[in-house]
Amino acid sequence: MHDRATQLPSTVAGLGDPIGLGRTAEVFAYGDGEVVKLIQPGFPDRLGENEAEVAALVARAGVAAPAFMGTTRIEDASASSTSVSRVPRCSTACRAGPGRSIA
Image (cartoon, rainbow, N blue to C red; front, side):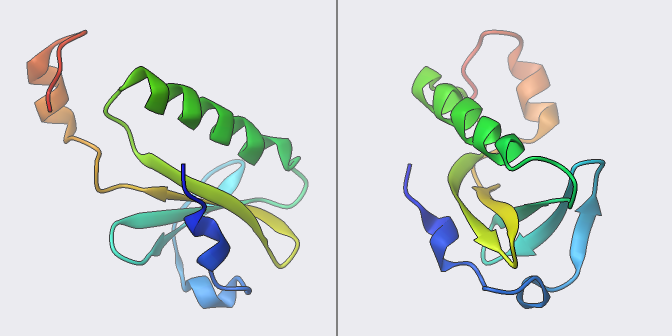
């Protein structure tokens, strides 16, 4: 895993407008085919660390999933960057069936 997240803007304003909002994080489009997940205030930084650990396990297993690019801090909030370019469309994955490679 390379740490692309260290190249992110230093301010939340530098990320632009969020494209999604969940219970624990805001999601921003960033660059070409990436998203940045910014953990909401009041949630532990451990959420981002857990995501990094799971992403590493998924990558080692060879599962078709977004590439986790790294973690950093933006204005004292934990942030992670994920590539979305490698994710197959759901309809493609569903046609392949469980346990079958779609690559």
